[in-house]
Length: 309
Image 1 (tube, rainbow, N blue to C red):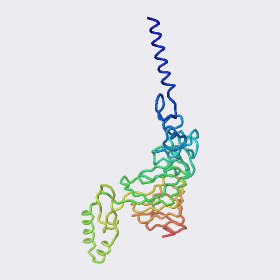
Image 2 (cartoon, helix red, strand yellow):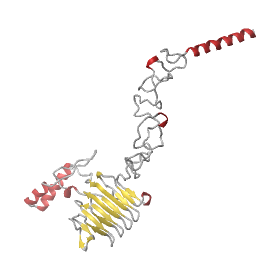
Image 3 (tube, rainbow, N blue to C red):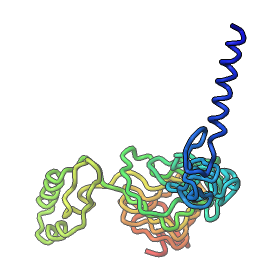
Image 4 (tube, helix red, strand yellow):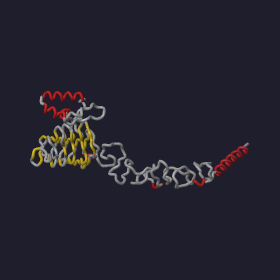
């Protein structure tokens, strides 16, 4: 019995060994542990080809196959700048590696942490609070941004002393209150006209430019001026000392810029088209070459208001 059992085990081993040994990569017959075998068509350089070791094409085999952007074999890396990544994607923004042309790459989904689309800038949002953790030199990402500051706290709130805020290419635009429907706005216009009681004023009011709210909110009539529809919110609030703010464009808010501390320096800002453009609630704030129309407690070069109106 023992001899018979040994014979069966030996026979099974020899049979399996014979089957394995019979698999010859490159003979055009897929067998044994081969993933593929296309005979002379096997290639280590052609895209999507069965490889010379009879394995299927994959990321990391050097050839750039379908679905791959690159493949540099053992040079693929998730740590080296500008390298082909280990998933055979080209180096890109969001891979966590600082590649050429990138100012930052934190590999996260937070659009408001100071790294946006691999540029070192802060994407504005309602109640964006800038503190000392953001650093001394801050850049706001360029673009035209529309906001409803219904909470009245301010869109950008600067809450750390000595910060320098660069808003080059940035437009902060305040949208009107959401409570005004087209019918309500029209009624307000009619009441205003009746109160004034002058035909010339009526024509002037109806020729003004209005605003259209976004999203699911009601829309105000495009023929109604902002002075009728109303203003709300604040564009930028400076709460800390010795802040520098430059190259901004702020319009459409109840208050364009509000300075609640001292030592602020504003230059080359276009803060106009707001109900009140600049309010300085403390003394010893300074401005150079700012554009504004309506201001409170604001002086430039000893003159009340802005020097570039």
